[in-house]
Amino acid sequence: MIARTWRGSTRSKDATRYIEYMEQTGLKEYRETEGNLGVLILRRSNNDAEAEFLFVSLWESIDAIRRFAGEDYETAVFYPEDDAFLVDRDLHVDHYDIVVGDARSGA
Image 1: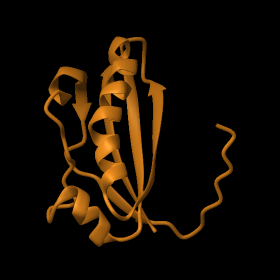
Image 2: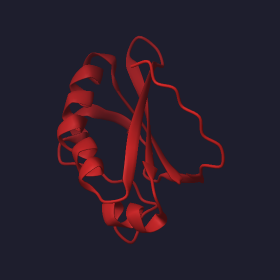
Image 3: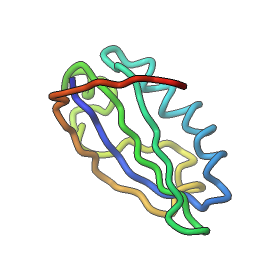
Image 4: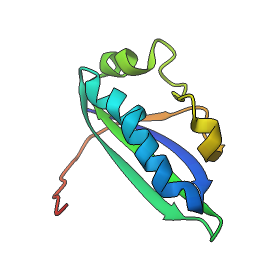
């Protein structure tokens, strides 16, 4: 299993709307891609003005990631309205092999 990570920031006042937007775009696309095993979105407040997000998507293989991101799978995928929300963003993503995993969900 592979974890794909990406970071970006919004204005604090836009954080909730950004997640709603991502539900309709990126998260929807993740879930519709064969080989996607799930996604986590982590949020923290950098200061009163910004909220930082860390997206961690889980994949069966690099081939599954390519189905989502294309051949240049180490480049971040963006959506039409991202510029309206993001004040900072990574242009590249990182991939990690998951070597140990034990998640317990209370949510």
